[in-house]
Every structure is written in C-alpha cells, then in structure tokens.
Length: 161
Image 1 (cartoon, rainbow, N blue to C red):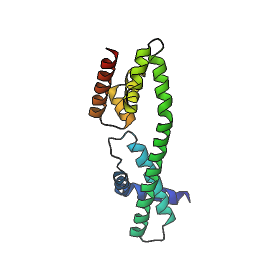
Image 2 (image 1 turned 120 degrees about the horizontal axis):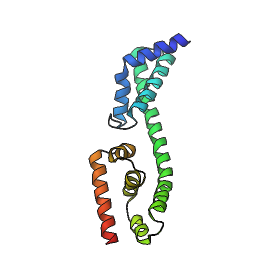
Image 3 (image 1 turned 90 degrees about the horizontal axis):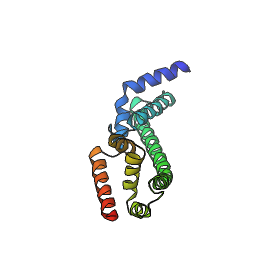
Image 4 (image 1 turned 90 degrees about the vertical axis):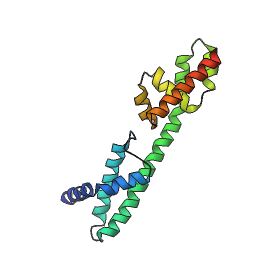
C-alpha cells in the first residue's frame, strides 16, 4: 500500500503540468502568495486519483484527475475567502480602536474608506508590514497596493484638513 502511494506521488510529480494547468484554470498564478500550498494540495489530489484509477486508461484518469484538482483548488480558495470575509470586520475594528483612542475625526474619516483601503492601511501602517507583504497578503499586485495606499492616504488628508 505504501509503495503504491509513493509510486502515485512520483507519477503525479512527473506529470505536474496537469496540476499547474488546473491552477491556471482556477486563475491562481505563481505571483499568488498561496500558489505553492495550492500546488502541493493539487499534487496530493492528483496522486490519490492516480491510485484510485490505476486500472483505467491514463487519458481517462488524467481527465477526471484534472477536474478533481480544479474543484479542490476552488474549494480551498472559497474557504480562504470565507475566512478573510469573517476576519476583515474584526481586523478593521481592531485597527480603528488602535488608531482612534482620542481622535473622533480620524474615526469618522476611517469609516469613509473602502474595505480594501482599511485593510491595506491597517496591515501596512498599523500592523507594521511592508507594502510588498501587505500586497501578497491581500493577493493583489504591488502596484495596485501602492495605488490604493496613496488614494486612501489622500482621502484621509482631505477629510482631516
């Protein structure tokens, strides 16, 4: 049994382009912070499919495996999004609490920012993460994070002036 698992993992690694294709189909690219984790998860699912369908033709097994990998990746992405949606209000509330112990104006200005602006400023400025780390955490390109930060700071300046 253990030998079969090793053989299946070896075969999955040799045909890792199938997993990379499933990730690409799910719009998960190498720049994504979770790419490697999702790729490893895809390899495991692919190896399990190869093990379960050892008696079927390779082409049929690959078709089914591609779909299983694709759907597993989508499930993981949805789960991550649900977790992020659940945590976002908590993060925003915590950051507002830090930024606004004595300043009601800042609290009102903070409320007028979009969710992504709040999250980006909270992670970058209040949590002390670099803009690159924050961009990776939010799964957005660095240039987009830079633009969002610039716009959010400008909004705050206008509202506090």
